[in-house]
Image (cartoon, rainbow, N blue to C red; front, top):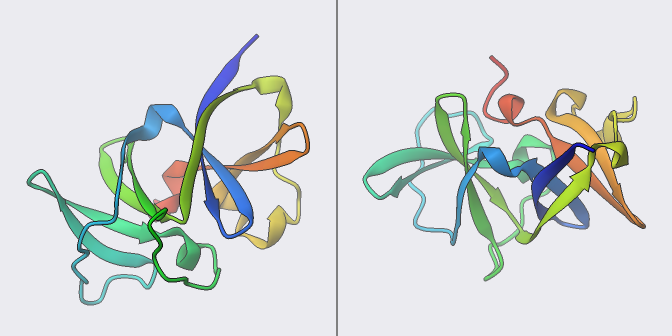
Length: 141
């Protein structure tokens, strides 16, 4: 039986998951340098061991209200094909395995989010996990 290994995180009361294969590392929020003329969801860039990588505010990307950083806020550094970028999340919750049988296609209304960002919905008991389509987060090429 196929299963996906996911890193799960929160944005407000919603819980999301990304495929662990795309996750390079999870870091505390370092200083972020603003970038002129970047799309509003690009918070800026960070220096990660000499590599400059863009940071996406998932809240802004998904049309959610921005919130103040807390000591639980993290940046999940992702690699999608050749692109490396970070997504800012409110809190990283866990790493878990989910059977592919527990994953359904996204609902047609796509939970008030742009459906191209969602690759499925995972169910773990009473919890609903929104599984993100990483290739679309950075900018849908």
